[in-house]
Amino acid sequence: MSAFLSREEILRYSRHLLIPEVGLEGQRKLKAASVLVVGTGGLGSPVAMYLAAAGVGHIGLVDYDVVDFSNLQRQIVHGTSRLGDLKVESARDRLLDINPDIEVTVYNEPFTSENAFRIAEPYDLIVDGTDNFPTRYLVNDLCVLTGKPNVYGSIFRFDGQAS
Image (cartoon, rainbow, N blue to C red; front, side):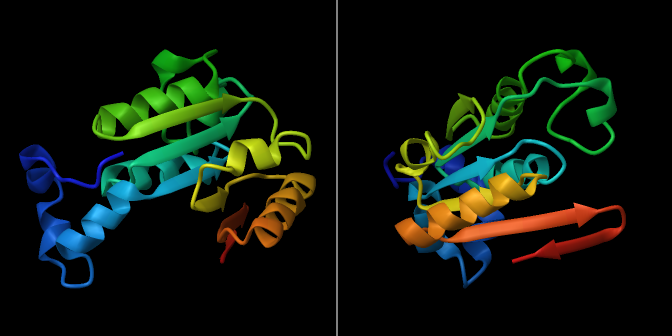
């Protein structure tokens, strides 16, 4: 993806461009960046939406579940009209609605030791939005072995952690 900003993108990101720590060069870096979000649930949903809104040029989404009515109160990327749809497709469509200038790749499959390297290969950074320890350990091991930054969060009831 070209890091050139169109006139429309300059308008879209005008507030970012005013921030000295971001500016034009920072926005170009965001556009050139690629981030893999593992999990499109309660953590991955808002992260993916903010990445899209910020202008991260390529976002990958990994999940293999479908949108359920019980998801809607916390998985904000999904809506009632998407009940029964694949979460990655629902999330992709919402991200492209937020920002049609980005690229979104979906992986409708579990994130496993058999596919982790293949899926993660084209991404600069991995966001762990999963809710189970085996996948969290896998994402961490992958990031240690590949040298990719690992951003993770955890929520349990009213407690949260981020790193």
